Amino acid sequence: MWNKTVASILCLCIIFLPTFVLADVPLLPPQGKITGINYGQKAPYTGVLLNTIAAAKLLTNKDYSEKQWELRLKYELAKQAANLNLVIETQKASHLSLQERHSVIMGFKDTEIERLSGIAANQSDYSHWWASGGVVVGILLTIGVVYAVNNVD
Image 1 (cartoon, one colour):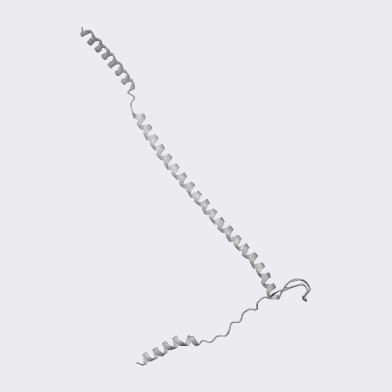
Image 2 (cartoon, helix red, strand yellow):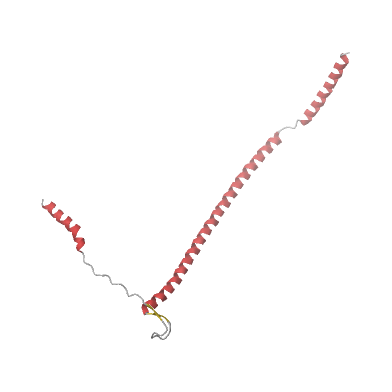
């Protein structure tokens, strides 16, 4: 029972105590002031007067903007260099793969040429037998036709 009571009190404290938090008002840094001066007002010249804070802001913004553009330029150059290096490395890899493919295809062609040359070299040339056989068959057919024509009478 005691544990439940303590737990309930702690829960209520956790819920409601943050609403009673007191804090000081934050101090804001002083702002720069820019004042326009017209002809006839008390000032050494016509133009714009800046207090020290506004002048300091302008000077630091000028330095900051130069550094900012310098950093942005370096970033863009580095990004462009990385992109171009990627393209170069991709082209190198493509070139190497094409060279490898070419050498493999040429190897296949060379082995096929050697195989076919071996087959062609091992075959015997029977062309003179075919020519002489054709002449003999032609002579025999001519004799047979002449004999058949003479016997028809």
